[in-house]
Amino acid sequence: MRLTKFETVYQMTFMPRIFPVNCYLVEETNDLTLIDAGMDFCGKDILKTASRIGKPITRIILTHPHADHVGALDSLKANLPEAAVFISERDSFLMNGDLSLKPGEENTPIRGGFKKDLKTRADVLIAEGDLIGSLRAVAVPGHTPGSMAFYDTRSKMLIAGDAFQTRGGLAVTGDMRILFPFPSAATWSKRQAVQSAKKINQMDIRFLAVGHGNVLENPASLINAAIRRAEAKLPRQV
Ligand SMILES: [Zn+2]
Image (tube, rainbow, N blue to C red; front, top):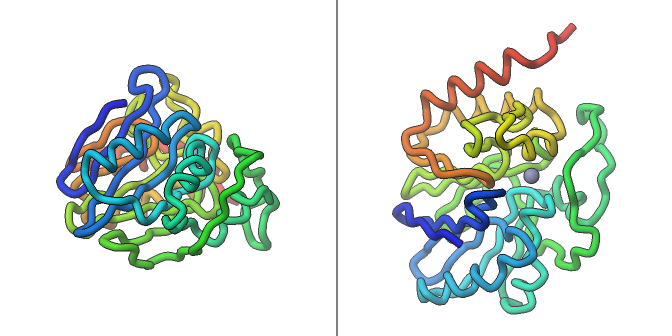
């Protein structure tokens, strides 16, 4: 595991060379918030990192419940029974195994791998604008219908889950990058993903952090270019 610190946020990267998977520990005055729970084998290193920082993990937030973001959730919850688990209301259905679409949603199938034997359930359902410690929740539907990003109001880092990928070149999710096609292949709505990227582009972001790939500093011009590229590939709407 590779550990990188960005002011108030620690990025933990598993398998950085082959299939990079990131989880984040956000440091608060007395405790830590974990964003995403990686793959099954990541739990021990996440707990070790928290104990090195010297603060307890009291909150576990999920950007979305794909298998590579909830892999260690059950084992972490067993070690941290007091930690509250947060996810958007919409994606709590996916977390609980219900992949059906809701009225009004774009009629394309929800894609990607889910952990069928996941036992942990959410304690808190979050919505746009909710504050969790220093993090503000930002709804970024597209990769999944209920995907959420989290904005650290101190460091101006946006932890965007799979709304973007930076491995293989910055891309809006759904815009396939040949060097790392996986997040794109797991994306529900490319059109919604572009809308969410435009919403993110309105924010004052110093660091863009994602589920797969390195953190980008001062990403505004790269985000602009990624949106143009993704938008150009969308089918015309009639
Ligand atoms: Zn995903």
